[in-house]
Length: 198
Image (cartoon, rainbow, N blue to C red; front, side, top):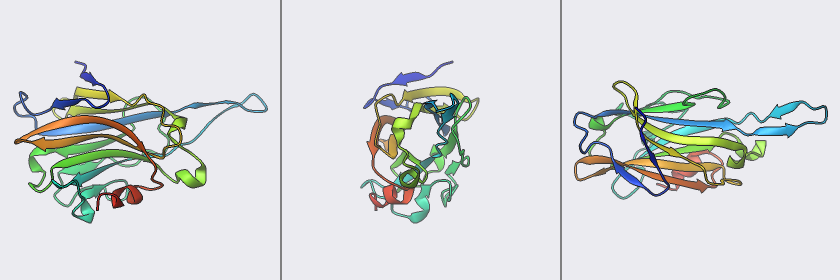
């Protein structure tokens, strides 16, 4: 069963009316844009290493603990409620390129949002930005059976941006919801982006 396709700025209930939903998988996918044919007619494809990360924020939108940044160099939160699948270096191939598993029922009470972002690794040195990426999306699946609940295609023009704030899982009135954000940002590294939330 296909999930609900969201548009930028849309918010949707995840757990309300979906009793028993506690473990979800946030999948992120992207493909490199095909480069134009080179001098000898050989198509060169840019090798772009995108990194998905999750920032576990408190009710003030702050990253209260260093371990609450889950990314390729810190694959799980101290409470084990958010776990990163590992780094995909190219983004080639079908399906999700990186996944973040979230156990909603195990997220500590002081965490109100799980913000999901994607950065381009070493973007400045490699002179790369999200204008070189196509077919980017974020989706949320029920971990039990991997059925897709929602999907948000990041179809805006993100040329010049080195980070994408894709979406967030957030707590409201004892339930979890998802917001489709889709904002471009200038951050050369995930740590630089995380510092904005300290």
